Image 1: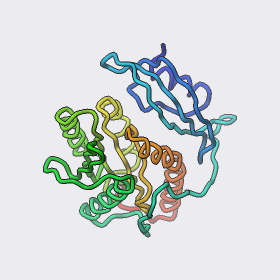
Image 2 (image 1 turned 60 degrees about the vertical axis):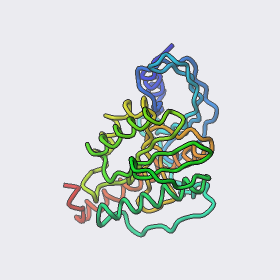
Image 3 (image 1 turned 135 degrees about the horizontal axis):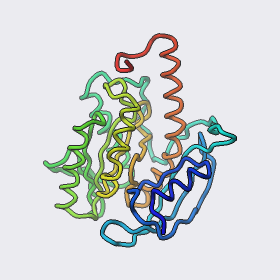
Image 4 (image 1 turned 120 degrees about the vertical axis):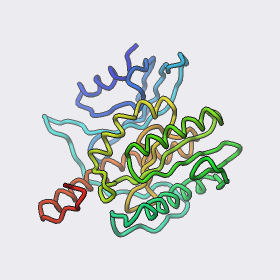
Length: 268
């Protein structure tokens, strides 16, 4: 058996920039590519992975992974329109990337995650130990809202781990953040480094990080695990490939702003 890290290295050797969203020391018993398709910036794979977790349990799960493909020493890029995700109704779009205050961010995140979960049949409940709580057929979804990927977000993640230990593994637990936080003082590079540092901790404890697109509240991206319910898993498998295109456009846009001398204070 290979470790997750060795599987990731194998993908890299083949020129595919794809990593399994699992701790690198987990052992992989079986991996099957169920679907392969082009996505903006590279390739998307639907993988069925059988692995052994830290408790010695054999687990089989589905993962939609996407990444760039290197062609003759360069990364293959494509352009495509960003399609709307599968939702019954759509929220109105925003006209700008920036947020004026932390309260505005939290209000936006609350609206986006509430709209998604209620679209999938969840109802809003009441709890004092979490920002938002939803329930569907006796399964709960505990949600913590966070403005920035920083130490305060890690503390929120730890509190969700405590809730998971208290209320059980049959519920869902997630952190909801804005997809781009430059206007809030956290550059994209710092944000992505935070994810890399904490990805293993989050994956082991089954804590999702769901990022809301700054312009489109109908687009949420799963930065760690996917939720277990099939309809939510399908939603995030649909939005996952869009992240590469959205991120590429964002980076290109900021590069053009810097070249024009109109970068924001947080860029420095």
